[in-house]
Image 1 (cartoon, helix red, strand yellow):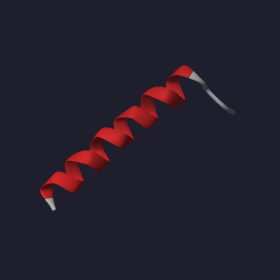
Image 2 (cartoon, one colour; image 1 turned 135 degrees about the vertical axis):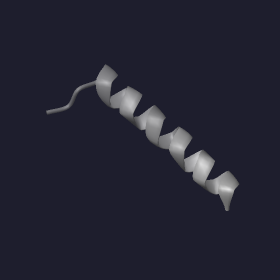
Image 3 (cartoon, one colour; image 1 turned 90 degrees about the vertical axis):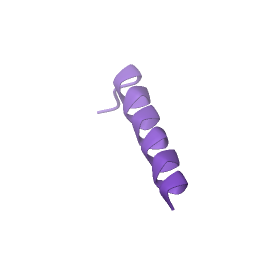
Length: 25
């Protein structure tokens, strides 16, 4: 369970980074 949560957190942070790189209004 903890592993999954960690994976999800990594994916979220990556998504946020992508959002910042390509700001789609």
